[in-house]
Structures are given as C-alpha cells and as structure tokens.
Length: 254
Length: 254
Image (cartoon, rainbow over all chains, first blue to last red; front, side, top):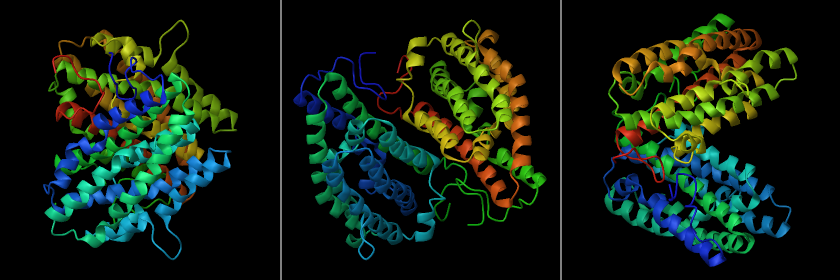
C-alpha cells in the first residue's frame, strides 16, 4: 500500500525541505484537483443542459457562502495579529460591504441568471446532502486541526486560476444561457486567488519545519481536494447518472 | 415548494401532539430510510460481486467504529444522570469489553471473512471521502445541536430491524463468500436496536413539547437519513457506476 491513499500522501515521499514540500503539494494538485473530475469536462465542454448547470450553481452556492465563515474560523485560530490581518481580506472578498457586492452576491448573479429563485438558493433547502457534509467538513477541519493545517487546506487556490480561465471561456462559448455579466465571480477570482495562494504557500514553506509537519500540510491539501471532489461526484451521480436523492432540487421538466 | 426538502419536513405537516410527531417520523422512515436505496436492492438481491461487497463492508466499518464516539458525545450533552445511564450501554454494545467482543469486532469478522486485511480496514485509509464526511457530520450534529435533536438523530433505529432481517437472509442466500458466522453483527442488532429505538421514541414524544420542537425532531431524523443515504450514493457511484475517487479502495482485479 505504498501509494497516496484517500487521505494521506505516500509514506516514502521526501519531505526534507520547503522545496520538497512544494513539489509534493504541486504533485497533489496535478493528480487530485477537481479540474480532473469528469463533471468539469462536461460543464466546460458544453455537454450539460441548463437544469444540470442550475444544479451545479445551486450546490456550489453553499460552498461559496460558507467560505467567509470558514475564513472567520481560520482567523480565530491565530493569536498572531499579523496573520489575522493578512487573512482578513478573504472575508470581505466574499461578503463585500453593506453597499457593495462580494463573491457571494456575484454567485447569486450567476444563479439568478440561470433562472433560479434567489430565495430558494439562499435557503439551501434543495442542495445535495453530500454538498452540505463536504462543505461543513471544511469548516470543522479548520476549527479542529492545527492552525498550520487550517492554512494549508486553502492551498487548492494554487490551482484555481487555470480552472477559472477554462470555465469562463468554455461556458461562454458553449451555453447560450450564460453571458459575461453573470461570470464576474470567476473573472474577479482570477485576481484574488493568486495573491491568496502566494501567501498560504509562503506560510507553509516557512512554518512547516519538520517532515512530520510537512506531511500534515500535504494531507490538509488532500483533505481539501476531497472536499471539492465529493461535491462533483455527488452532482454527477444525481444529475448526470440520474439518481437525485430525496428532497433535493429537481430541474424543471423532470 | 410545499414538500419535504433535502433537510426539512413540509411546512404544513401537523405537529400538534406526540402522536402527530410519531406519525411524521414514521412517514420520514417510510420515504427516506436507506432500505429504499438502489444499492441495498443490489446488495441483498445477490447482484454485487465480492469486490463490491468488500467496498460496502470497508466503508461501513468507518460508520460502525464511529458510533461509540458519537454516543459518548451524546452522553456528554446531558446533565441529567438518568439519561446518561440509559444511553451508556450503547457504547459497550459497540466497544464490548477488553475480553469480549462488541459490534466493532463483529464488523471486523465480516470484513476479514470477506478477505480484507484488518489493519487496512482499521486504518480507514481506503474509504471514500464522502463516507468520512457523512459519518463525521453525525458526530458534529450531536455535539452542536440541542440534546433533544441529538437523541432524535438516532431514530433511524426504528426502521433497522426489518432491514437487518432482509440483509441476513438475502446475503446468506445469494453469496457463497458469506457464511452465518460473519453475520453475527446483524443478528445481535436485531435484539439491540428495538430496545434503543423504543427509548429514543419515548424520549422525543415526551420532551418535544411544542410544534417547533417536534419539527426539530423530524429534521434531525431527516438529517440522519441523509447520513445513511449519502454513504450508499457514494458506494453506488464509485463501485457500481465505476467512478472510484483518487486513493480509495480498488477491488482486486480492477
């Protein structure tokens, strides 16, 4: 069993330096990030119908709207003021201000543009139970694990810009029910994610000082890739293979 | 949207008495319990191969081995000594004593009888991430919600005996790699579950005193049916439809 498992890097991965760590993290991204999931191939390649894209956006809203809660928990883990100050903009990136929009409102533009009622989306009553469990696992993780692991679990942002770029062009090209004004969430994240990822990568390179700590950092990233992968598996099972669980959103006409 | 959602009973369900509550709970069981999941039809009807039954038993081990942890959290929520005393046997039902087996060891007999290495099973390194998230959601639920909801989430036991009886006869009849000695977990639960379910049902009938409290009890049971359903959806997607996520158990010969 000398290989990466569902929750751990392989026991023989070299983790003797910050460069070793970064190489291991990039390998995890290259093999486990959700750009590799078949559902994304369908989404970006124009292979889904409007109801399936609605289901994706509806479920993903729960993830988006939980991110500032997750980041508030991360901040709460640090007595070090400088880290709290550095992390704080993540909350406003998603929550905006009372008179200006943030990432959550941008996501609601997408769901509304897709024809979903905003009240229904915000109620989260129709999301897949697996979406809820995966997203809540992320909040619990940053609360219950070490502060180092809490920061490490954000490292999927290293791999997000390529995915967002592919999504913007793919969805605009293939779906006539998508126009550029509803895609502002992703265009904005193209600027935000790299800045955030750079900080988190520098942080773990500096603060993971032993092979065992570097292993925890790797496993935190694996955990996070699972949070993302499980959401797409659940969407694929429900809305591509047709096994919608009881009480979840049913696209119009089904 | 006047119907049961993925997380809530319908807003117009009558919950004005203990009898109303019990009727609503039995309706949730009749429509959401995982005996209705297609994966159980395949499992009990002899339609799975040995690798698929291994995957089910391997993943379900994580659920079984987490139950005494969940029950310890439930006990920790009660200042009332009588409730703690009543709940305590659930831990020993699963953990046994140092010199006599409990439910977890009985489950390991099943996985070992299926040819899985006990160390691999106990490591939980090969389970599906969705299994982990669903099971951990159960522990978080009984920690974070009210004590009344913590007890209510155990009410799926009302519906377990029929399922266990069907499983014992179906699996013994259809699979030559299953013999009665590895099925002792289920035969034992035929005695334990009804006793436990009777207590929990009496408890919620007595302690949920308003329609709003009865609604919380119903939604706790819906939550728990989701914990069980998500596990089977994930097994079905991975091992029936063939989408095994990165790092998870791969049956021999695949």
